[in-house]
Image 1 (cartoon, helix red, strand yellow):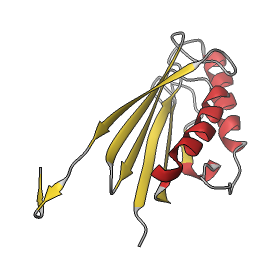
Image 2 (cartoon, helix red, strand yellow):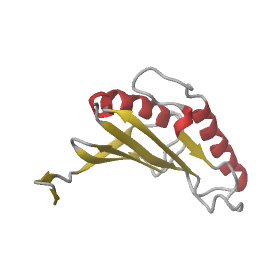
Image 3 (cartoon, helix red, strand yellow):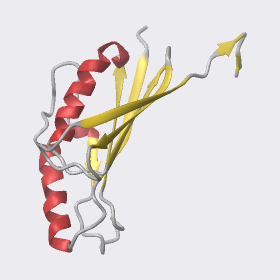
Image 4 (cartoon, one colour):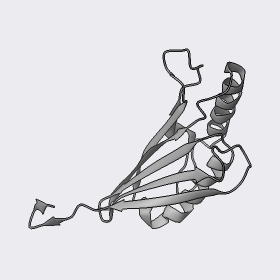
Length: 147
């Protein structure tokens, strides 16, 4: 049986600007997600794995920051991780965001947390390089005991 990998995380939008500016950014981000295919070549990155609120900060669903969350279950995605990251970063390049976190949980190599930062205080579509950092946590077992 193949090993299961779980990928989940969130993209945080800019929590500032007037209502019109925030709505323009939020609608743009939603269009970027909706532009993803419903089914994709391996490794999968599809619009169905994303969910977000589109409302203004005054609405119940969003206080200040738009949070776009996502998640999916894969068969051993860690072996194709560079390809998945390349597709995900292509999406990030087309969006507005302040910070991004992706968690990769694998059965064999533990949990990896990837975070993205912009060269400036926030990222605009098509602007500047983005940087990724990775932290690794591993819980092993020895004789059935977790440590």
